[in-house]
Image 1 (cartoon, rainbow, N blue to C red):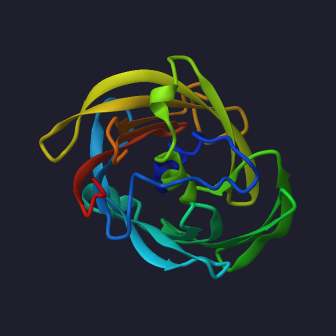
Image 2 (image 1 turned 180 degrees about the vertical axis):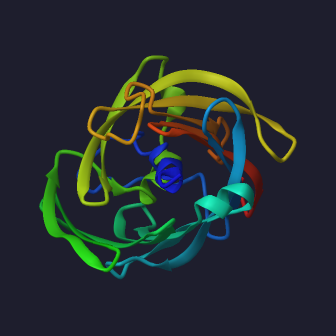
Length: 266
C-alpha cells in the first residue's frame, strides 16, 4: 500500500526521450483540467477498493519564474484499507508552458511514515542539475545534487504530463523508449514498451480506445515483475487521458481507474 501513489505516477514515468531540457509543444491539456480516479489494492486474488485520487492543472508561474502550470496529485485512502493502512498524499510540480520541469514537492502520510520531499531543476549548457531534499519521519535522509546529461530528467508527477504530449501513433508494438526519473533519493533509468491499442472500460461507464504501455525497470526493488512492473492505458485521442494504471508490487498489486473528468482541452 505504501507504493500506491508512487505506482500511479511511475506508471507513466518511462515515455520520453529528448534533449536535456525537453521542451515540447503541448496540444493535449490545459489549465482547468481535473481528473478523478478510484484506487484499488490486490492482495491474493481479488482487488479491494482502497481510496480515491485526483490530478489537476492550474495556471501558475514555474519555479524559474516562467509562465507555466501547477500540476497536483492528491490521494486519500478510504474504507477497509484505510482502517489498517491510511494514506494522505499531496504531490505538486511546477512546469513551464513547454513542460520543462522546475520544482517538485511531496507531502506523504502513509501508515506510520511521514515524508516530505523537495526537488529543484537548474538548466545550463545542456546539463540538468537536480537538487533533492528528502525527509522521512523528521530525519533528513538525503540532501544532494546530481547532474544529468543526454536526456530528460523528471519527477514522478511532471513525467505524467510530459508523457501525454508524445506521438504514440508513431510507435509500433515492441518499441522501447528510455527516460530518467527522480524517485526519492534516487535517479532511476527505465524503459517503456509499447504494446499496441486496446479497449478499456473506466468507472464512468464508458469504454475508451487506448494505447497500452508496459514499464520495464531493473533498478527498483519495489516491483515483483521488473519486465512488466506497470501497465498504463492512455486514450488514443487528442486529450491523452490515463484511463487505467496497473502495478505489480512485492506485496500485491495496485490499480487506478478513471472515474471522472472536467476541463479537457478537446
